[in-house]
Amino acid sequence: MEFSGFGTSLVQLLIFFVLLLLVYKKALPPLMATLNERTKHIENQITTAEKHRADAEKLVAEQKELLIATRNEAKEMIDRAKTQKEVEAEKIMSKAKSEAERMLADAKKEIELEKVKALASLREEVGALSVQLAEKLVGESLDQKKQANLVNAYLDQVGRLQ
Amino acid sequence: MEITPKVTVAGLTFDLTIILATLLASVVVYGLVYFATRKVSMVPRGLQAGMEMVVDLIRGITEMTYDRKRAEKFVAFSITLFLFVLVANQIGVILMIASEVHSPIPALGITADKFHDGAAHVAWLKSPTADIGFAFTMAIAIALFANYMGIKTSFSNWIKPFRNPLHIVEELAKPTTHAMRLWANIFAGEILITILLTKFNPLVTALPVGVWIGFSLFVGMIQAYIFTVLANVYIGQKISGH
Image 1 (spheres, rainbow over the protein chains, first blue to last red):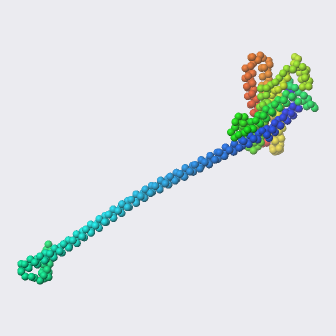
Image 2: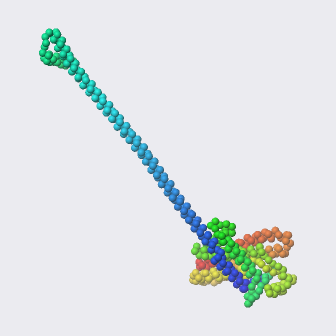
Image 3: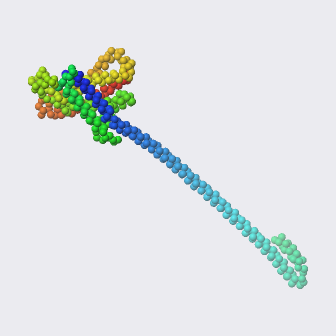
């Protein structure tokens, strides 16, 4: 094996350096820039995706919370309405009852009054008839007022005995 | 053995075959990188995708060897070295040009004393890496650069291992093995191709040559990778002060 000579080595190194310089300065930079840009782009995409995911999760949680709150509220409203209904029903019932009682009492009072009135008029009529009867029987006119007192006393006596 | 045309100028010998092959390899490498990086797009296609694979491969090497900041600085060097050695390795497999010379050409160093049986096998184009001088030139240049980087980074760290004299042996062994590994692999490949093609009936050796060429392409790739990895490792060792 024969050594190819120092001249060859020098030329070879020179060629390599020129190539290195050209590749380093001219050919490679656009590719490296694109590679870096792509890395950045992908990193951005990942970050954005991560953010979107977090946002979505937050929104879902919010929605869930809202749903629960709404459900609770609805339940509360229904409960309240139920209670209200019962109270209302109770009120109406009691009102109706008291009304009925009042009407009944009124009616009773009326009956009582009518009864008293009827009794009084009956008493008067019976008094008058008795006097007329007595007049006819006795044939003479008694003092009407005296007679009335007499009859009343008699009737009272009868009432008491009854 | 094949000889190569040489000229001597001012006491320096220039091997025309090696220089031509080196030049060719450089042009191919530059063309490859240039055209792969012209219409770069965010979504890689064709040659760009191939070049990005190379960049990824090389980044793997540099990031393994240096810290992150320095790794990026060695990417261009490593890509150039890798592709240069790779193409240089394949020239001899794909494009070997040799001829038989029957009369001496003294101007090219092809003299009568190199003739056997009235003829000489002259290689006009072969892998420069199959030349031991080429391989040593690269390896020694890298070793010198590694030591330069070591001294530049920290002289005390660089000088420390030399307290053990065996370290000198190691320092000499590194470029020697670095060069020999590359040279021997490629040289052996070319020798076998030449022997199979010239010493036997081509009808018999056609298949083995085909297989061997395939294998040589593979070896050429592996050796280019190993050469680049070792270059980075040697430089990295010096920088980190081991």
